[in-house]
Each structure stands twice: as structure tokens, then as C-alpha cells.
Length: 407
Image (cartoon, rainbow, N blue to C red; front, side):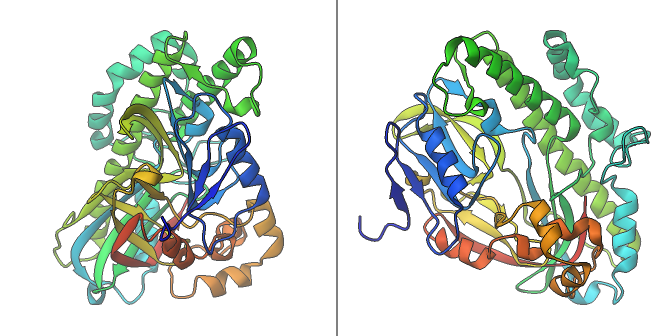
């Protein structure tokens, strides 16, 4: 079809890669990584690369990998269920205080975030989780105990104390304004320490399995479990639990965030006028092209027709609430953000605190050496990313942050 919005890369010895990357840069290493995944015998039909595609570990961030009767744990990754939640409120821009510093401070005080050096108390976890956290943990605890019976090393992880906490790196909480001046709350987080432990554990088991059964892997990080293998069922169960933990983690944080804002802003308001809670690092069984397959979205969002999703920019750029167009060629998916154009190390070498101050003008956020790796220039142009996927989603709301709390 002549009006298609993607390019097709034919891969020798593998399935094609369909790339929604017109007008956005793609590094050669990411292309090589996509080709490696495309050569796996378990991959179904083709791989879809989103416009935010960039180098990951084993599998490329910003890729959609459908597999038949098998799952690649490293393609799901270690931040299982990482994703976004956004909620529109009845507050308007003029209801926000002129000085947003106290609002940011209150959010930072209320939601554990960041991490501490080894040996010190983890500032990113609860010392004593509040009752609201324990009530949600109670809904997750039985299945977690069952997983720990099967894999005891999962027990000694930060699980209950990480529920309702933000994390580090590119995880964030934002107060945003939409195109009509309404206030939104938005946050980005996943399954925290326990999800990391589950991911790491099963990636190791898959690699051991591969040494026996998968002799020609192009990359050891693409080791996979096939249905019927010793740990396949355990992994499906563990990954499903971690994805549920991540979803609830965002809900707990959002409730805490809203309660905190109510203490700072006296005007009564409603929240969840429109609310979205979506994963962008996960695997689930879906039906595509007449077949039941496992779809792994590593840095990609489900975009079924009519389905709402969230595509955030950087800490100085716009974000978008989108509605899926259900494009079958992308396995009904879209990008999960802008996507990095450089590593964290390179960003820290290339930019200064002054650059960060200029790039985040008008946003109440940290502007210090420890967040330079998240500088907006380390990311692709979100507008180019949105243009490249105009056949995958339509924009419902455009959000611009006024407060940003970084992990």
C-alpha cells in the first residue's frame, strides 16, 4: 500500500522488521538488535519498531515482539509492568498557587522516591507502609507467597515496602496542564525492586535453559522459555503478578498524590474525570492475524481501536493522551515516549546544570547535576515521534508539565 507510514527492513534468515521511524533517528546498534530478535525461530509474522526505538539489553526498547508458544524474559525486561497513569481533575491553571515550590516539596515528602547508597536506609521505600498500602498488599500477598514457595530467592526483596513508591531514573510524578487549562496528574513507575528481582531471576534461568536447548542464539539475552519448558509456567505466573503489582503501585501513588495536593490547594476538586493506567513493558496473550500469540511490548503501549494510552515527552516537553487506531501492522501498538537519543553517561558529559535550567524553564523541578541524564535534549523530538505514528494513534489531549518530581 502506497500510503503506509512505515518502512520494511528485510532480515536475512528472519522475519521482516516494520519500522515507524520516518523523520526520527535510529542508531545502527538498535537496528542490529532488532535484526537479532527477528532471526529467532519463535517470532511470529514480523517485529514492529516504534518511533522511540533505541538500544536496550537484548531486545530493543520501543519494539513489539510477537512470539508463538514462547516468551523472551529479557525482552520483557526487569522493570516488569512499568507504565504510566494519568488523571484529569476539575482544577484549572488559575487554581494552582503562583509559587509551585511548596507543592513539589509536599509531593516529594509524601511519595518515597529515589534510592540510597548501599548500607543506608532505602529512601525510595516506606519505613512503615501506611494502612492504605497494606490493604492493597493484602490482595497481592497470597500469590507472592506461592511464587516464593517455587522460587525462594524472591522472598528477600523489597516488595511490600516498595508498593506505592516511585523509583529512580526516568520515573516521575508530574502536575500538568492540558490544552484547555485543566490540571492533570501523571506518573510513571513499574514493579520496583520485586519486579527487578523476578525479571533478573528468570532471565538467568532462561540463559541456563538456552545453553542446553538453543545453540544458535544471536544474543544470549534473547534466551526464551518455550511452552512445556520447566520454568515457562512459573515465569508466566510471576510476570503476571509483577504486572498486577505495577498497576496497583501506580494506583496507590496516584491516590496518595491526590490526597497530598488536597492539603496544599484549598479549593475542592474532583479527580479521575478521565483516567488512564497503561503498561509499556509487559507481555500478554493476544490474537493477531488469526493466531493466538504472546505479544511483548518493550517500551510500547497497547493501541487497540478506541483504547486510551499515554505517550510522555521529557521533563521539559509535551506529553500526549492518545486514542488507539487499532493498526494491525503494529500489533495494535504505539510508542511509549520520546525515546532516548543518547545514553545517560553521554548526556552527563555533554550538558551542564545551566543547560538543564534553560531546558526546564517554567517547570518546578530539580535542576541539579544528578538529573542531567534526564535533560530534554537526551531524548528524541516528541513531535517528530508523534508524526511518525499518526497511523497508530490520534491525540486526545496535549499536556505540559508545570511540576515534575524525578526519582
